[in-house]
Length: 526
Image 1 (cartoon, rainbow, N blue to C red):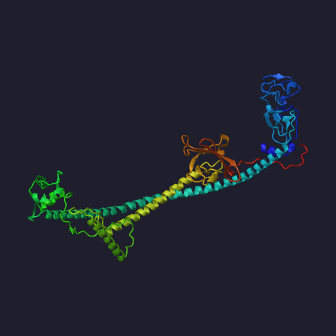
Image 2 (image 1 turned 45 degrees about the vertical axis):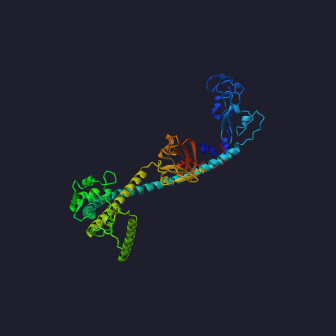
Image 3 (image 1 turned 135 degrees about the horizontal axis):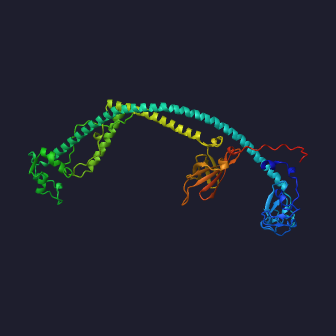
């Protein structure tokens, strides 16, 4: 209504009603010169000729509206052609032009230029621009409302389709889960059997190696080659000393032999070798210890579909390179061996690696892997559908304003760059700030709720639980929504510590404009 009145031609303000200086038109009926004046607060009554007599008779100063006698009084500026204004009575005749019509300086000797018409003209231009923004913004708002209606119907339709398809996907996932589990049973049995056979073979190979080492040590200790190792023969190896005196006494040697004076090869291998193995040093470095007959082993194949094998020439070259590398390493080990010591334990050889799966086991593995791949793909598809359903349900049920006019903001983000920071607003999601010269963003809050007053709930948004301030509360942001033809963040301030205020212009905030004033013409009644 104010907008309409201010846009009316200036002639509409020409009506003048006789009243004391400083009294507004709305209060003129309290000042009837035909009878005593009663203070507006009812505190007293005085003869009317004491109104504006430059002496304060009323506690509320209402008897001196046109003078500076009462410090708590108010002077009314008529400001014809512009907006009426109340000023403090203390400013009357103070040598400063406070009213644009200059009526407050009627007796100060100061000549005030009447600027009301010019101010009124500028005010009307500004209001006309605001009215144009409101009209255009409201037009765009109606388009946004229609767009959301169509989009909501499409999203609802898509949601229905996804919910119907979800059941089919769930059935498919369960079927593929069953097929996967069925394919994994023979795979597990075949792999377990393969590992069991390899471990048995490995254990037998190690046992054979230990037996060969024990036999070699027995033959070396049996100096007289009588088929037995005696106490005296065992004493030739002082490294087997048990009491730390550096020599193997007869008693210590007999104890190692289990209390006997000598032992044969079978007993040495079964009982004696395990007790002296770690300390025993060979007198002569073995150059070609017999090794168990174990086929060359390679790493097991990965549990994946088979890939084409390498050409035979490439495999031969790789084997030669491997043998040369292993030979070089063994040579280095032998060069660094201390004479008389047991050969150092070398790193696991090829015989310690599980051999490749046989053709049937590998076929089981391939079939199970294919079943797993199909199951995992179907499970991913189901999760994607479930996530899409959740997102659509959330968006469809979200409160985007009385008619969904704010829905278009849901998937958008807007930025404002200042001297120090880049502020980012993603409506209904989050607000953040990031140093202009680089650095990590700081959360100024995530979506909380609409935060406007009860009569205008959708005029503000609240974002809460942002990054905590040092020894302070979590950051939060209030976003005020202003009418505009474009969607843009216009300002960001921090009126209180860790509490930010942001302004966003958007057509969705434009109210329905009032009817345009009638075109000016000849109106004699005015």
